[in-house]
Length: 155
Image 1 (cartoon, rainbow, N blue to C red):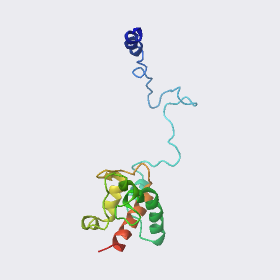
Image 2: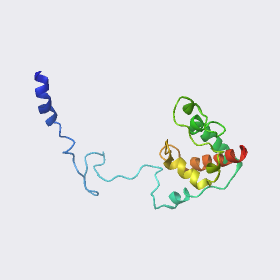
Image 3: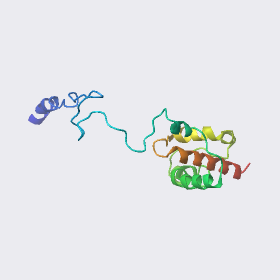
Image 4: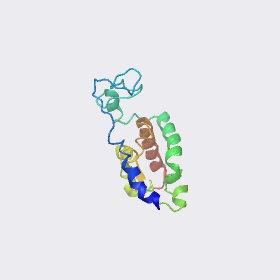
């Protein structure tokens, strides 16, 4: 019973999150070994205003290598829900989860590759976005492969 009375007092002392140090951009910071608050970005990062970032917005030209990469990435990230043939009968919906779109349906056939890319990136319906999990070139490859699946399925 005493613990219940002491708990609010103990929790009131836990305000360390409120009193965190603040660093000025060009100031001194004890967090890093070199004593600087501002650090060089990690290798491989791309500023949003760089040309390399803008180049991710355009679909690469269709090629056999792009389709093969798309098939491989589709098998990893998409087939468990959408099924290997894109009909939406993967193992996840078979276990009671919402059924995803059938790529052979009329409304899905109307989508272009940019719309498919956006759905992969940002999510659609119950599907969450993959922008933080799948690199942009692989998302374009998956979009190209989904287009190929739609064309190969029932008309």
